[in-house]
Image 1: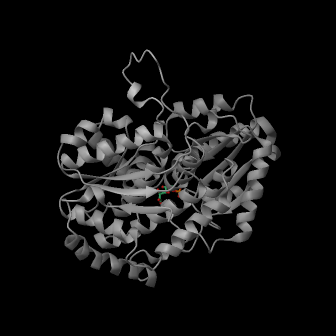
Image 2 (image 1 turned 90 degrees about the vertical axis):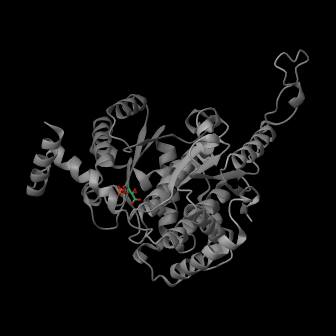
Image 3 (image 1 turned 30 degrees about the vertical axis):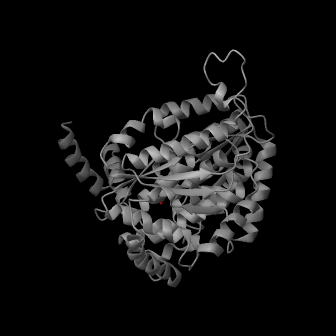
Amino acid sequence: MAVKLNEKYLAGFVSEEEIRKVEKETAEAVQTIKNRNGAGNDFLGWIDLPVNYDKAEFEAIKKAAEKIKKSCDVFVVIGIGGSYLGARAAIEYIKSPLYNALAKDTPDIYFAGNTLSGTALDELLSICDGKDVCVNVISKSGTTTEPAIAFRVMREYLENKYGKDGARERIFATTDKEKGSLKYLADQNGYQCFVVPDDVGGRYSVLTAVGLLPIAVAGCDIDKLMKGAADAREAYNGKTGTDCERYAAIRNCLYRKGKAIEILACYHPFFTMTAEWWKQLYGESEGKDGKGIFPASVIFSTDLHSMGQMIQEGKRNIFETVVDIKSTGAKVAVPGDSENLDGLGFIAGQTLDSVNRKAFQATALAHCDGGVPNIVIEVDGKNEYEFGYLVYFFEMACAISGYTLGVNPFNQPGVESYKKNMYALLGKPGAENEERRKQLLARLGE
Ligand code: PA5
């Protein structure tokens, strides 16, 4: 079993009887997902993706990844939200957060179009100078402003550098199979396209071309990734009494007892972006209709020196979910030192990972004493298989949890509000935009 729930640090916070009550509802949610008759059921393509994916496209992704590896030093992945978080999470988890700085035979990978910061794009352009560059622009809708602007900039850059024909060979578009301005632009220019299936939402799309192409370019084995997800599907899909369902039940149970904030914690920086991916998955899926567990994240022990005080003694409305990665393969140990001036002789010879494990146990006990329950999710290792397994675990648990909470876990209506205001303030043509613009400017006093 690649992923296992450990409930040791929940004692005294929730009783078996309380969890059992919620499990009646999570069992119904499992059934709803299986029968595909719940809200948002036209976005359930992620359930069977690990086995039911487009095999021809999968091979095309591998081929494109090889071409990209051979033809560039810098690979720019343009996308926002679900169109970049999964790929970045996978690369950092499987390879390293320092992937670009490591010696390797694959291109450096930079993520763009996930911000409107001019500084970020200026810096990227200067990194690209003097290097060969390829671009993967990813947008399911094909209309999102942030990636569209970044793509305009990168396309101009590539066309100036390589000419229109040369740029065509270096641009790869991942988008809807037929609609959206990105699809139109890609077809007009003859870019190779990959498809985001209609029935897979952005935050559930890491196992489609959205995630797979950048992950393959980084040199990760996408067959193993899919195998991990397929084994998790086998373990969880349509099944009750699983650790996946139990995680959904426990977090809902804690929520009902006033624990409205879930902090996902891990003791390894390579998990930072996986936590960001998880935050989008749970935040967008559950935060609606005035409900939702607020998803936050920390990397320990780093954040014990910043957020530790708040977690230990602040408002008691939080619980932690600790992802405990059992084996990382790290070898570094605390060196012996005959002078022992720093007083660390008592741990000389111990690996950092074993010291880290003691930090985890010590923290979990301290936080429990401070009134913060800890759910622990044990993961065997740090590779493609485990990552794929964990992705599916969290996706299925999120769907079960969302239905248990009583929301549609597959829509995100609230994301539109800022966009409408931004388009109006930017002066996008259209009567509705103009009217909104007047109202907003009056509120801004401009
Ligand atoms: O989960 C979602 O649907 C969103 O976060 C999207 O992934 C994000 O807004 C990017 O959308 P798109 O891929 O259409 O550009």
